[in-house]
Length: 241
Ligand SMILES: NC(=O)C1=CN([C@@H]2O[C@H](COP(=O)(O)OP(=O)(O)OC[C@H]3O[C@@H](n4cnc5c(N)ncnc54)[C@H](OP(=O)(O)O)[C@@H]3O)[C@@H](O)[C@H]2O)C=CC1
Ligand SMILES: O=C(O)C1=N[C@H](C(=O)O)C[C@H](O)C1
Image 1 (cartoon, helix red, strand yellow):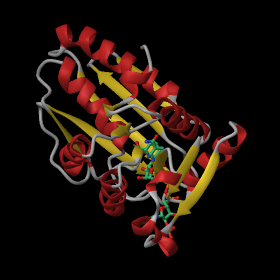
Image 2 (cartoon, rainbow, N blue to C red; image 1 turned 180 degrees about the vertical axis):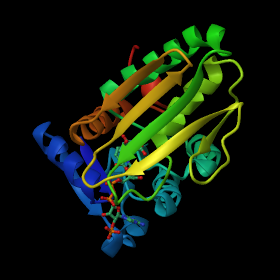
Image 3 (cartoon, rainbow, N blue to C red; image 1 turned 120 degrees about the horizontal axis):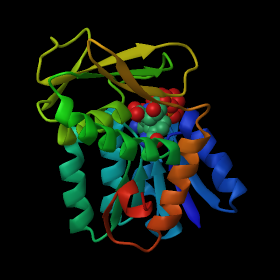
């Protein structure tokens, strides 16, 4: 397949390697210095665009592709207040959009486990208080991580009495909230831990990424899966978990 890569940072470079390993062609790489080339790109040359840039540029990049009818896999976090607009643009252009806050298989298994645990803990919500810690490298621009927000949404849907998340150090902790602590340490690809704590004991579930390979492979698999599809998709459509 012919892929367009938007964003050539830590993820863009890892994705490029996996595309090559799997026999795909990278028709163009768009980064900060040549971002104007996206406007003039011929959509007929591209099957799917993969977009991993930064919160402030994701919306514009994705919209430009969709307006050209190019299918997009996006992994950029921190811009989802505009996701509804992107979904409308996808429908209007009869094209396809795939989004995941985290493309790794392990994290998507962890998402399912998190929902299941939250459901089990719900009967004991007077005894246990939920909280979360996410740890990432120091270059990360957004906090909390997109993955932490998805995990918090899984708790909110399933654990009675919790209906919002708060960010430690920015928001006041509340009884009806799950507090997320965002820690930044050099070189950490992504660690997420969900905790239920009572006076008597503590239950933790934790996912630790050893590298970015799982995120990148998942994004490439999503791109292969999206080929010739029309609509709005996420990992739950691609994986049978
Ligand atoms: N969903 C998932 O599974 C995962 C999501 N992510 C998310 O992906 C995003 C990228 O992560 P990562 O690769 O680590 O970040 P990097 O900072 O390493 O890379 C981002 C790249 O995008 C470039 N860029 C910035 N603005 C534009 C623009 N307007 N057009 C084209 N390129 C641009 C940057 O250029 P320059 O360096 O010159 O500024 C840089 O090369 C983040 O939001 C991160 O949270 C990360 C891992 C997994
Ligand atoms: O910025 C990162 O690096 C990561 N971002 C994603 C997120 O915000 O959840 C996914 C992964 O944790 C790595």
